[in-house]
Each structure stands twice: as C-alpha cells, then as structure tokens.
Amino acid sequence: MDRNSRENGGEEQLIRERVQELSWALVDEHLNADELPLLENLLLSDENARRTYLECVQMHSDLLAHFAAPPKKVTPNNGTKVQASRHLDFGLPFNSQSRTSDEALQ
Image (cartoon, rainbow, N blue to C red; front, side, top):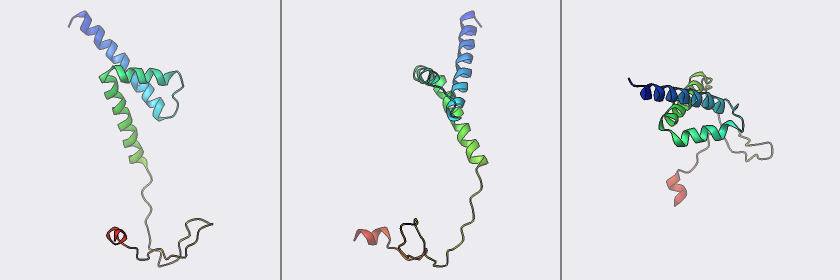
C-alpha cells in the first residue's frame, strides 16, 4: 500500500467518524447551528459520507422500533358513544356501519 492510499484511507476514516458524530447529534436533536452546514456539505460532497449517514439514521430507526412500547390491546367498545373532543359529540356508536369507499363514490 502506498502513502497516498494510506492517507486517503485515514482521511476517509476521519470523515466517516465526523459524519457519525454529526448524524447522531442530529437524530438526538443536539446538532448546533454551526454543525448543520458542515454535515450538509459532507453529505453533498461524499458518497461514503451519505452511506454513513444512512447507516446511522437506519440504526436510530431500528432502535426506536425495537424499544418502542408494545401496542396496547384494543377491546371492542360495545356500541358506546365516541366523543371526538369535548366540543364534538355526534352520538355515533363506535362500531357503527359506515359506507364502503365504493358506496361513498356512488
């Protein structure tokens, strides 16, 4: 491996680490106003930076999904009224029959 290859590899590693740092700051909502343009420039100018950014965002999304609370069990409402807000009360039973989209179009 020649010197240029080693230097380019070292520079690529520094860029990768900086993009990771900035990406995590962004998803954690800790990126300051000076860092946002830096991240944007790195992403616009370097394909590896874009790949690194996407890896971080994907991991963030995966972690959110993994640690999200399990969905609550939905129990039938047994026809009781549903109040959309305290100002709106249409008196409609929760499981009332509504027209299908085809019926609504006719």
